[in-house]
Amino acid sequence: MNYIGSKKSLLEFLEKSIYEIVGKKDFTFLDLFAGTGIVGQHFKSKGHKVTANDLQYYSFVLNKNYIENHQILKFIKLENELEDLKNIDYKKRADFVCKYLDNLELKEGFIYKNYCLGGTKNKEFERQYFSDENGKKVDTIREKIEEWKKENKINDNEYYFLLATLIENIDKVANTASVYGAFLKQLKKSAQQSFSMKPANFVLNDNEHNVYNEDIENLIETVKGDVLYLDPPYNHRQYAPNYHLLETIAKYDNPKIKGKTGLRDYSEQKSKFSQKKDVLKSFENIIQKAKVKYIFLSYNNEGLMTEEEVKAIMSKRGKYGVFKKEYSRFKADKTENRNHVASSVVEYLHYIECK
Image (cartoon, rainbow, N blue to C red; front, side):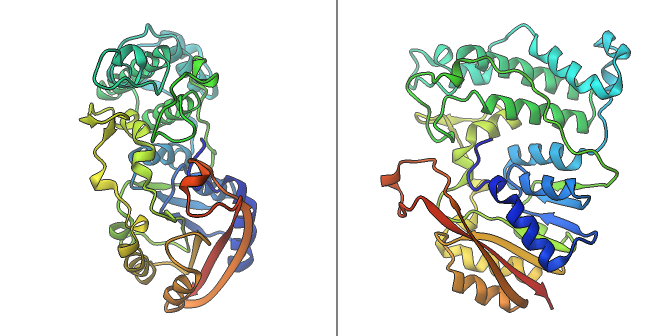
C-alpha cells in the first residue's frame, strides 16, 4: 500500500538503530501509531512480541491481521457452507476461501452506488474511485464476510484476515494518484483491472500479540513494554480524509457522506499531532506517561515539532540521543502545494533510555 509516512524503505535503518541501543535480546515492542503495521510486522518477524495501535479503523483491521494473527487459519466453522473445504489442507484453506470470494455473483451495494461512475451517474456528484466492476466486487465480498461473521461461520482472526485481504487488494486498483483525497477523471490503467483476493499473509510464530483501536493518549497509561516506537503524523495533513474510503470499506457502516469526494465524518479521528497548538502538549504527555524502558520517535526535519523541541521534551525523561538518515519524500500532492520542495528529507530517530 502506498501510504503516507510509510517506513518500508527505512526498516533496515530502524532495526540497526534500535538494536544498537537496546541490543538484540528478546524485548516487547510497542508500535502505537501503527498505520499499515509495516514496522510492527518487521519486529514481529524478528521474534519480538508486538503491541500495535492506531486510531483509524482500517489500520486496526490491517494490524489485527498482520500483527495479532500468528497461527494458521483453519476456517473450521465454514466447512458446512463450503463443503470442499473439508478436503483442503489447513495450510491452503485461506487461499481456497479467498478464491471462493473472488467468484461470487456481483451485487450493487454502498461502494458501487456512491463511489463508482455507474452508481453515481446523474447524481449531484459523480465519482469514479473504482471501476464499476471493482465497486460491485467490493460490496459483494464485504457483505459476504460480514454475513459469515454475524452467522458465526468465521472467528475474529479469520474475519480480520479477510477484511485485510480485501483492503490491501482493492487499494491496488483505486483510481487515485496515491491517496483518497481525490479521484482521477479517467480510469487509469491499473484501475481498469479486476482485483483478486490475494491473501494478506502474516508472520507465523508462537508469540501472543495485541492490537488496539484507541487514542494513544488514553492507551499509554494502560499498556506496558520494553521498547515504545512512536511514528506520529509529522504535519497538518490528517490521515482520516486521505484514507476515508478504506475506512468505509473496513467499517461498512453506510455513513453519511458529503461533497465531491464522498467524505465521511472524521471529527473523532483528528490527530493532535497534526495541529500545531496541540502537538507539544500531547507529545510530552505520552513521553511522561509511557511505562517502558526505551522510547524511539520517528520524525523528520519538516515536522511541526522542531528537533530542539523534541530533544527538550524527551530529555526530561532520560538520556537522549538521535540517529539521522536522508531519504526520498512521499509525494501525494503537487510540488507547488507544499511548503518544502526538496526531493529528500532528513529522517530523525530520536531516542531515550528512560530513567
